[in-house]
Length: 445
Image (tube, rainbow, N blue to C red; front, side):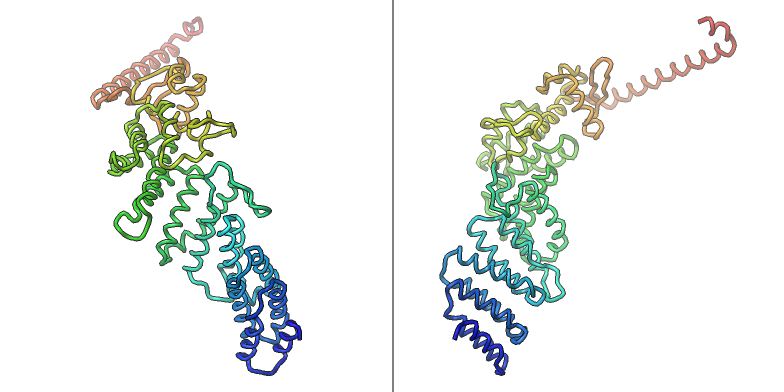
């Protein structure tokens, strides 16, 4: 009797349901070839109305465990798991849990092969909201975090290899991860899994970094750099230092201004950065320059790119995809703009005023107009206190120069401005009186 006929005989028999399940198990146990296994699951699902869900559901779950446990090649396992997904689709509403189990095993297979995109794609098919079964918050969080880890796998590398027809562009991967983070943010608070929470925070930091939200990324990386420092389960010392290095890099890339200054103050107080034996000498040197608003020469930035513990992602070093040498960064890249804005802020501490031509030379820009553009943008965003005189081509920094103006000097300037304003108003009143009393004189003038 063929396998298909045997399953038909079991389904049509009048024996109790537990005995039908036992009979199906005895038929499944000796099977190992993919064709026989595919015939088995197809026949079981075809006779599901006769078997009933009480038998067919555990029979399908047992089949999944069987194909995962048998000795066969990974290619055969992939074929069997994908076939199971295909035959479950028409009656998915009755087998959601079994289909989710297939997807989890198939994703594990892809993860073991380094096919992260296909793993994430398979996991995205798992229904986390269902009226057919009870799904715990921990399960939702675990699947979501697993998807995040696969979406972000190798996303910082210079070239992400195509993963076949299921390949997803790096930018789209980041957007998918950001959307998933937003959906999972409320659930993660209910999770009892500390490792899942840790991976979720790391995914947040990486997405913020990739989306150029550097202040938020800096805060997340800095928070992660403390995980496990008190002996609790978390990140080991080397990985904590990598997170701390990433926080310094994000502070370098963040827009110069008061908000970044507050973040730099927190980083500057960290003893791990100051420790000469801590393994972060370049991060310490860079942090000092950033915190004290020192000018950043290109050579120092290049040394940091080459030697920092956590490498600056290449996407932040290029603007038009040019081929770069070791430690170089392209003009108008994210890093280039960040360094220019920092040096402009540093110049405001050194000068009371400066012409745009000299400022452009100081910042390494091609023209005074470019320097004026940077200054105008920072003034508009309230990140730089200055006044631009476009007629003379000069920028006046408020409180500029070493030490700036003290309170008495500022009050004197305000009083002087008020006196000048008063004189101008009086002159205007005199002109108005002359116009009224001697109009012929005004017409002659």
